[in-house]
Length: 245
Ligand SMILES: [Fe+2]
Image 1 (spheres, rainbow, N blue to C red):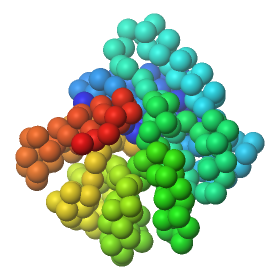
Image 2: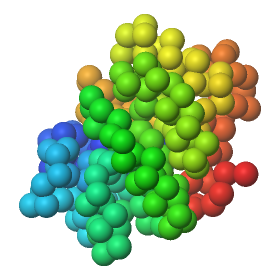
Image 3: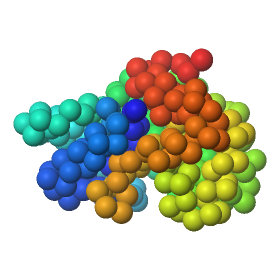
Image 4: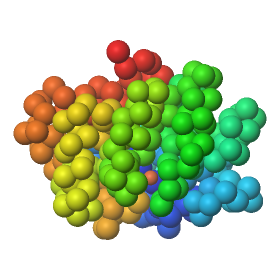
């Protein structure tokens, strides 16, 4: 399996606090059957637009290289791809122009995009349209956990129609975020609005890189091939910068 959205680079955001903690996450991922993770730190360390705390492409690439070196040293067999989780903001378009915004695996084809916690700004569709016009497909991170998408699912359906993709969190499937989220998640999956399931792990305990329990449920809900598409086939195409169909 490929875990396409993981906070595993220490010191860049609210992920692990040390290299040892990052390695522990990596061990858990491997034990869960994950062969590749995409390290996707928040674009801004504290999740608010703050240029002095920007995780630009160079910073993320250097930290990922260090993680690969340490994994090899510790004999942990896990591939590490790179990306970032960008908040929806006008600044991101500028950062993209300057080559400082890291797309998934640096391919310039897909980008993880996070909504503000309690809002879906009116500019959302406009910014997504601008990204799509540049050939970049936004992957909306965990819309199932967003209260406004739950209240107005047609807004999410509209964004998907516009060309955005949706990534849901594995824990949302298994009830880690409560029954409302779990019920809405199932609805989105059944409606075919979801392209990727990932752990969005931040540590080893509270939010570990574990997706196999969710996959077991996906098999029951959607069947084997669709379950596999969500955690392997689609993530592989996204990492390769290829179209999904
Ligand atoms: Fe995340």
